[in-house]
Image (cartoon, rainbow over all chains, first blue to last red; front, side, top):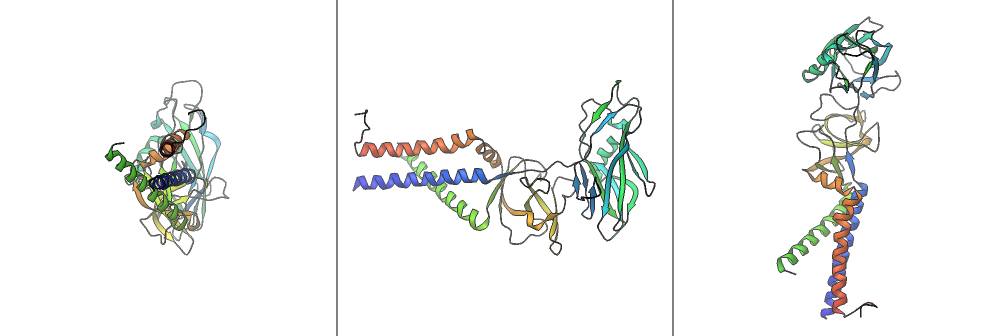
Length: 188
Length: 166
């Protein structure tokens, strides 16, 4: 009788262990890691969507790397990187712009002297902001762009980067990447 | 074996067994999911290294923390707070508590669950279990030890000695 009891006990323990091992293995195989994808061009407003090809609009898009920015040289790229902002809402949106994180700046360029130039061909809007001012303005909701995207319209913007001659000491160009631009639309 | 240690092991085994059974049942019936938090986008509510436990949502309302498949990568799960729900349009807007901007619109069909419990630091354990060393060290080896112990006891009880050990 005692032997039978021990046999039952051992069977129960081994069964329980098997169940636990199976459950743990299954949970490990099935569980996933929650992440936030690092997007670089974003809209902070539900009805303002962004695109870089004027085809696929979303609230966030992978951004650009501005290479070969020469101190004191022309804004790069000459043709500009296109960004499209579409107003899907029911009221006109006044735009604000900010940078949500500090860009990758391996060469130690003075970000007060690096400028993001943004222009829009159909309205003639053109403005330049230092990267530092855009980074600083993120906490307060962004810098006003003095431009409006009307209801149902898509604004085509071009982005370029330039820097002052004394922003960086060196004869070769530098690269600044990971510029996380955030556009906000305020109903107007 | 000391009595207190024996009692502790029995209770531990019972808790783990009941927990495993409950977890498997909830997995099937209520879509229980465990997510290890990897970023700080939901601070201060959720920190990197926490474990978010989510269940299938019956309803989704503003303020809920939901998990959804990222539009950019369906294998990535994002856990953010609901800002606004547009049921008639079939999507919602969510945002990380510590982020200054909202996520892209989330189709309701992409929502995988609603966070019901956050266990601080338990995500680190989950991350460790994802590694072969963690799974072997924390699950398989202890299980092997317990099973071996039970088999050795039985063999001793029945005076069984494998060939070569007689």
